[in-house]
Image (tube, rainbow, N blue to C red; front, side):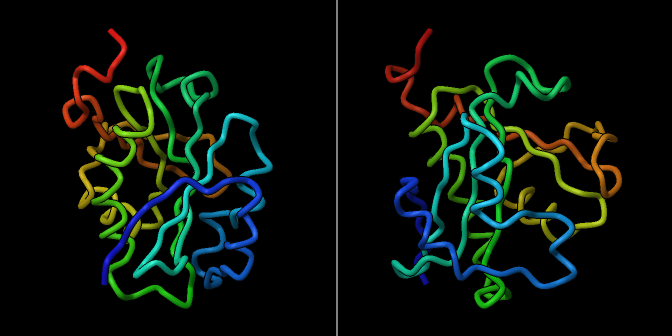
Length: 165
């Protein structure tokens, strides 16, 4: 099983139309079309397993402008899902492990931040496995309870000559 990540052009969003989530995960995530409709500064990305679409995530380039706890210049992981039909095979952990070099290649940002619901320990574990670090702070304004705030350093994996000073 080879997991790869790639940008998802808006014209290819239909590749995610069959994705579903089990009922116990639905409170934590939106499906791709809903996620992409929530902000003009969002970029969609596809998660592939052996070149087949199995998941999706969105990067919010304006994350620091809308999240008081986030420092200036960071990007945000707004959504991350593995299609229900493909869960249970380690794809989330593999995709999270691939995020750091992928995001460092595609974005000029020092870090990627996210919030993950305290009631979703499996997702938190996948993010931590992928190199995210828990800030120790909680986001309390979510509609489904407290969320851990995690950050992923990106600058140490990027080519220093490709970064703006």
